[in-house]
Image (cartoon, helix red, strand yellow):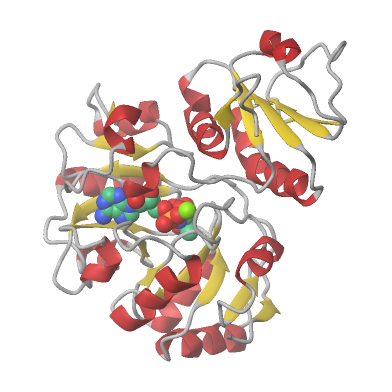
Length: 344
Ligand code: TXA
Ligand code: MG
């Protein structure tokens, strides 16, 4: 069992000695959790296959699910792909640093353990100063999945990381809550047209506009839920994937809430105002009014509700509209559809 240390680091001007210490842990083959703008990541030096293997072990993550490689900028990204295309360049210049992961053909410098054995690598430049300085300090890219145990809710605070990975990570850099709150958009640039493998903070319209093409194809659920080993499969897109411990269900609309057989200790999560008459939820969380605010609060809300050890969490699906795609996607992974007699 590893002794996990938590060190607070200043978000805007991270202390150099702390960054150096974290870099030393990483260069020694250790694991360091750090905040990105989306969620906390569980980092290891991406070119160190042994260290990367420790990430999979710590998370209990299946080895076929590839990791995102975090780089400090475009120049460093180019070193790890054999095809820095015009499209990659346009998207990187527009959205990096930021919550966009580009899937590109990998070079031999990216160990197979990082890519799940596949020929591509997911690259991104995280926005926070702490994350970028850390990569710079190490001088090598960092492979980092979300810093949660496999199938648990992604962490938006250092406390969430500690609760899930105490004894499994050497160091947690605590720079406060993340600002975006939902994982990056993953775009496959080896597909034509580019395909969104995971919806996220940067939506299809923004991507299409940047690429000046009209089609950025979303990958349908049917395709991704089967564990296709093909180069374009994104294994993180399996069905229930980010679930709380509390039984969690969803209904299509607030009208369906009266169908629910409410246990005594239940929570309701909704993204629009709802008439609460006849809805006996003990705890009610409205996450609104915009999809950006909702993204920031979504995992946070699930973590808080999960900690209350309720009997049931009932969520109403978010409104229609592409800006809610990422939240709808995460909600569908965290819950199962409500069925009156098969709830538990
Ligand atoms: O915002 C984020 O993306 C966070 C922060 C820490 O950067 N990371 C994150 O990592 O969410 P993870 O491992 O929890 O999810 C990575 C997703 C998975 O769905 C994985 O299958 C996909 O990205 N992915 C990574 N590399 C890929 C590749 N080469 N081809 C296809 N999908 C890939
Ligand atoms: Mg994850």
